[in-house]
Length: 282
Image (cartoon, rainbow, N blue to C red; front, side, top):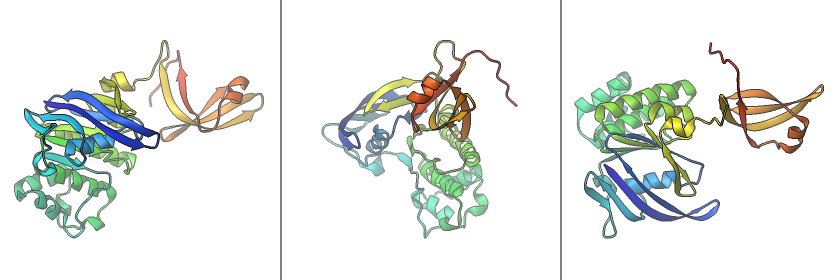
């Protein structure tokens, strides 16, 4: 069990705020941290890793990592940390990057096999694709069989098909090693696929803590579908107005009234919803 009760003053784009959170994470849980940019997600990860200071208590399986008297050094916390930028040693091969963490060739070979990197073990990082580099980063983070795996939007720079592949590999390793995992993500499909629980931060406070379905499913009343997107344009076609809305990687057209066309502004975040119809998936 991980017990977190911390506070830290932050200076963000919206001024000063307190990162003030209290929650617990059972052993082996996969938890997603979500919320708008500047809400404190990455800072919370860095505090758990011991890379930033704060006031309060962090306790992991009865071991105090931080209290009012002391703070355990990052290298003694038994964590794995996966960054957005891979952070691989450019002068070491794939296998050497793993063995730098722990001289365990059997474990390194096992991890490379799971992530389909065995044939690339002698390659240097600069010869790898982004997806391959992130898989090496994932393997390296698992070399110490960490109690806690921290991931800061690890797949945000990858294309959708590679993201899905790495999500599957992350889930496989999470289950095999029984690691408690905390991942920062803005991607609803990624959160739903991987996480058992979502903690949503806003201005440094927890505003939601529930299952992915409860947090992410956005319907109200009799709505059957509701999607959030950015309003890109409003065009007049004959006597009607058509709004162009970006939802994820897709553009959709929505008919709006003349009054709505006057009040909506380009760049607005809008909800596109519908009530009764029979959807088809093909």
